[in-house]
Length: 507
Ligand code: FE
Ligand code: CA
Image 1 (cartoon, rainbow, N blue to C red):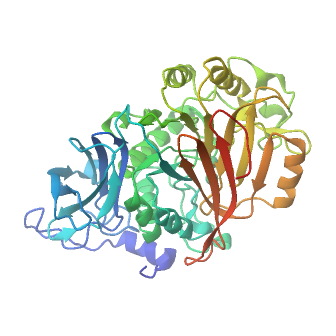
Image 2 (image 1 turned 180 degrees about the horizontal axis):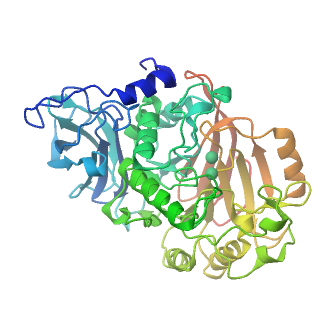
Image 3 (image 1 turned 45 degrees about the horizontal axis):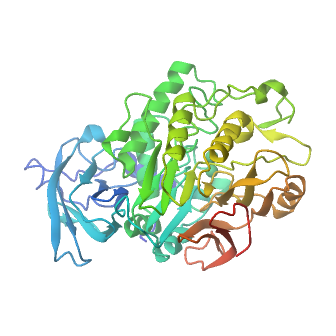
């Protein structure tokens, strides 16, 4: 990786974006490499996939080093990594009003097979990415590997975890939020810096994504497999929910900020047009099928949630367990429409394994003084109950929740009552870089939350899920040292859920 100039150099570069452009045609004017943030794919279907890139010549500059002109981009998809057997190709236009992002929805591919792709613009070619399609809906699929991660705060470490995740050769990567962090860099705890301002508008959110995406290990993970992405709070603002965050912004100003953040998210992710934002709204929850083996429903617990509860008696986010407002049956972390949608997705499934991708720890977490957080599912226990009841009443096959956000690895049983029978199982996959919490405090948490069977807060990393018709094996992968780009990785723990037997069991 080229050396970073530090944030003073970066800020200077932002003010003095070099004139890469002449007055010739748009293609001829593309003098600098516009593929500095790499390529990505996502949203695999049996006959197609989304290809993504964003033209950026200077990842650190406000404006990405791009002049406000349209640029024609070509794309090609091949059956081999050397791109000799091209099966689809076409053109797309990168527009300045869209952040020079390109989203191509490729169709007409064969199910359940690998493809390779790249983009070209002017005389420049992108890196080659690998992707794959999903199997046919009725296919008897024998295996699926999903790697999942979350929380990749730039200043807190290097992306060694992404390098290892790519090397694990997953069929799918699931990213569960906190892809960027919106706050100004804090030089005191940073090992590398991004701009010393908060991301608050379209230009600064765009800049933050480009800055993160310049990382070669993150690019390698995107180029390794199709991604399914869901955001959490930091793609907009810390702990936001619905139409409010923790800053003093009025509702209107917050929704303006949210609209800018959603637009930048759309521009920077390999998503379908069906997820495109309109103002401060962006439809992101969706489901993906992998033959008859697995269904993955990914839910958005930020955009539609009811406001925080019990603030009057809160210590930070910690609220008393018996605060009555918390338990109100109509409170929802997903909103009514999304809850209904999810109910349908878990009722009409043919899949042997039914995954719920969601941002955080789904099970209850009481801390030692008996309090719970009002920023996650414990602030909305009625939604959790409704989902577990649906799993039980519809006899959903093998429900498994995958989560992130809490910067710890957790494995736990999901039950309707404390000490009750497990209806589902959950695995929270740590954080890529963001700081965790001491294992000493987590050991105390395991004692007061016996449904949680495993917790690890000191290691950074990701989760790997290996699914066959008979079993789902989840391996927590921890890097030795997230402050070291070249850090090795090891298995921290592995668990197996056998078909028809919910609950955490060591592999
Ligand atoms: Fe986080
Ligand atoms: Ca978060």
